Image (cartoon, rainbow, N blue to C red; front, side):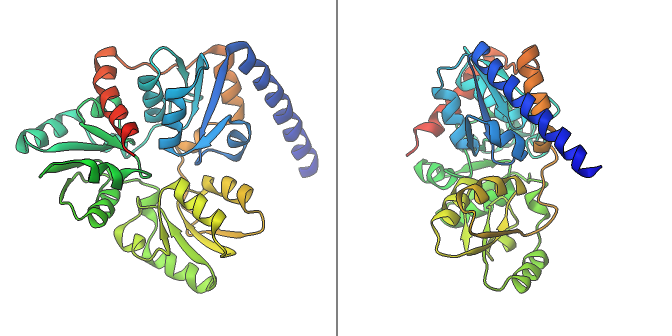
Length: 312
């Protein structure tokens, strides 16, 4: 029975992939997928990447329709950077708890207390927060963004763990908002110690959204893309991975001969995983749900995103 069910599932996915290719041509659509998506989504994407790479692709694409397989703020960023495009998301329930941890009223109050401060906002935030921001960043370029600023005071929103990491790397004092990624923040020192004991020859690669004491244990610390690149180029054959488990798709694709052990079974973002192949096809059939950002918000938010893309 299990074999028959698997066969049916494979046939269904084959039909969905065929339908997807047909719809992409009809709609002149491009599919962008974050590394934390399900394997079945990453398999059919035109581009896989982290928030920074996908923002660049959204800004540069000539496609008329962008299907963003990620969470809501990512779709918003694509719409802001490509306002003339139709931007779809397979499931509008794909939110981000960390993005919800900061609100406009609270940020405005903090800005009023520090009127000379520059506001740096992690891309994991709503369009409304980006509109209150001087410059955005991603985990891939956060250090470079902070180093690019000539400011005595810097407000950092919303991820406290990444903020502490950037503060340590740059030596600049940040006013840090108390937000965090529910998934990365779950990883503990105990988890890592146990995995290191189990796999003594493995290197520990970790995302800076994890807790500072966990990040301090890393043999390599970096964004999702940086982790993938490091593991691909490294001579090491075994890794303990401290980031969301969807990253395993690209890690295994790039280095099938290497072993990857995720540092905890809880490194799964439920919001990223609500998208699936069936919903992806349906959103292109119905052209819903579409991402909408009010022009007044988008115009302000676009400035902070474009400044981010200009930092080298």
